[in-house]
Structure formats: C-alpha cells, structure tokens
Length: 208
Image 1 (cartoon, rainbow, N blue to C red):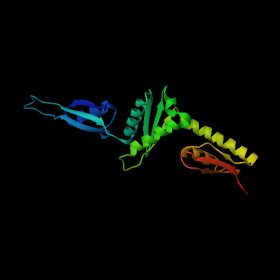
Image 2: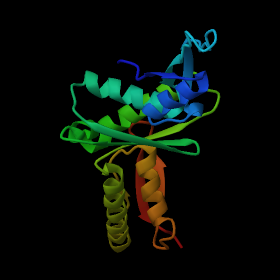
Image 3: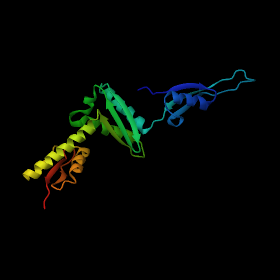
Image 4: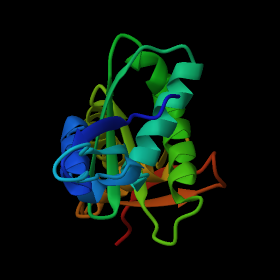
C-alpha cells in the first residue's frame, strides 16, 4: 500500500511543513518531516531558494489499525468504506459498504477474527495496550439488543419450567451481555462453562 505523503515549498522549513501537513488534513505534531531542500537567502537577494519538505503521517496506533484493516479486507477482495477514531485507550473502526456482510460472517465470527488480528497488529511493538473494536453496519449494537431480548425471554422460560437452559457457545463479549442483562433478575442465576471457543452460558433457577 502506498504511503500517503505531501511535498511543499515555503520560505522556511516550518512554513513548508505546515503547508504539507495541512494538505493531509493534519497538524505538525501528527506528521514526520523530511527536509528535501534547505532554504537559502542568496546574495543580495539574488538566488534565494525556498525550503522544500516532505511529510508523512506518524504511525499512530489508529493509523496502524486502519492500515492493517485495509490490507486484510483488500486481500479478501472486499470493497468497503472505513472510518476510525480513538478515545483514550480504545480504537473504534466502523465498516460500511456492499461487502460489509462478508466482514461480519456467520454470527459475527469473521468480524471477531478480524478484530482479534487487528488487536495483535496494533499491540505488537507497543508498550501501551490499545483495545481495538471493529464494527460493521452497527452489527455489534444489533447483536447486543438481540442477546438482551434472548436473555430476558429465556429467563422467563427457565423460571416457568424450572429447567436450566444452555445457550449456544459465545465469545466473552456476548456472554458478558447475557450475564449483565440478568444480573439483577431475582428469578435466575447465570454461569459459564466449557473451554474457549465452545464456552457457553447456562441460565438456571435461583434457589431459595
């Protein structure tokens, strides 16, 4: 993948760098600066030369995540639009487009796999851990709502029949949604059993 860069002239190195950074929509603090030509005042005003610089975006955690995601999805032959943002120690990447469904995969398994690999790429050479959350077409929000509704419905069934229910295997995030949804339900208890990736939630009647 080509590295995004900008080259600009200016009366001074700082002026040229500011123009080049602005060309990329970035500030001076967000770019690496390479001086291509030093400015010169010339002699008696003759032969004066402007400064020329080349700037490239600094390899931030957000940029690493975005670059990795683009490389992976391009190799998968997918056409997608991506946007990313960082809030404290969490990077959020949102994916949209005609191929978003392929990124999600069955029950979000492909999405989880891409998110896992992106987390590894971002934290590979970093001293500070960054969490990466990848979402496609608001899948995670929709899935969370579906799981909350499922948990409430099954809790009612368990309480009525007095028989425990074992849910399908879920990832840690989805199991947490079930546990959190029912933690204040006085009728039932929840617990997890099994080994990853087959660990699942059990909903059972609260005794006593």
